[in-house]
Image (tube, rainbow, N blue to C red; front, side, top):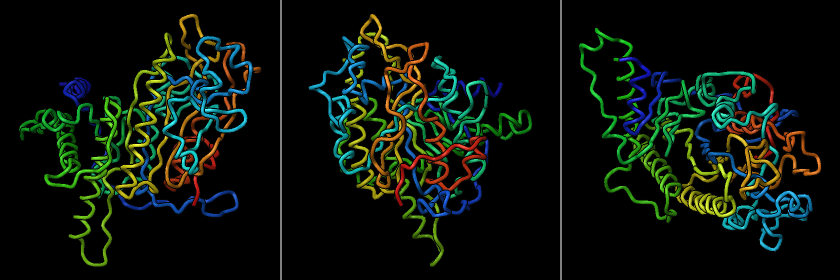
Length: 423
């Protein structure tokens, strides 16, 4: 059986698993990240600082999410789908949020929510498949890279061996930024995962097909890691109430993974020799997906429902992370393949565009508006907004200030981190 066929079968069974690197990687991290004046920005705790990525799959319409309500051009471009001025949630004299994002306002008022506007990249590609590949690999638009940007990070500085996995992908078979290198678990259907993926490796297979035998061995190791991440029988359940629907279920699963990994850390600490620290928080990255943002037709109702799910999910996620004592060590960041065009189309929707705003939240986030506010009088020849912030600046913020890594080596170019974090 060919490796590609085997991995396709795994995905069809409900779990995609990648583990090219062996368990037992080193535990050391870079020194704390410093700014241009050589002052530490955030005490670097390495991979004990958790990253949660939320993919807004399909390309969210930014102008109806973070709304330039004071610009009359906005309503001229969106006569039918523009959010009425008396319905928006005003943030300042010119910027507002979609009314479905009302649940996020406590985070905003406590300055634990940052909004980065105008995010894209040079020469943007408007194909769903190619553009998300660019985001996942942190490549240029004319460059094709195989490994995800997180896989490259973990190859440079491995996640400690005490962690059950580098990352967990929930609700999708696509490994995205964890592809081709990360020690990652994909829980497409968490209830079926362990049963569907429990594989045996006959001894004779090592002689007949060593490559396949290695893949099976690796997969069995990941299955064992997933077993360790499943909540133990009798473990106290989270008190947080999670919203319904697929996205709410994914968030609940993600928080259960963290709760289980935290109980493992306590158990490991109890077994460790006195005075010797035990490493491991379970995982360094969680990635969730909220589907449905490709709103070419009848956008208003669809987007309102999706943004409502996102906002309610964020509130539940924050509550669970506070309950677990992890909110101050967590950075939540949205991303998507692209945004939408400023001008509405004839089907009460929007077509593929370039820039979009993205949300960053956490207990150590310096909240507020960042990036480039849309100037609708300066659209390019294709009717799109120019790029204000390269998306790799978001990644550089994670890699440098958040994790203490050499972002320029991983991203293959120098990108200035954004001042989104406070010490």
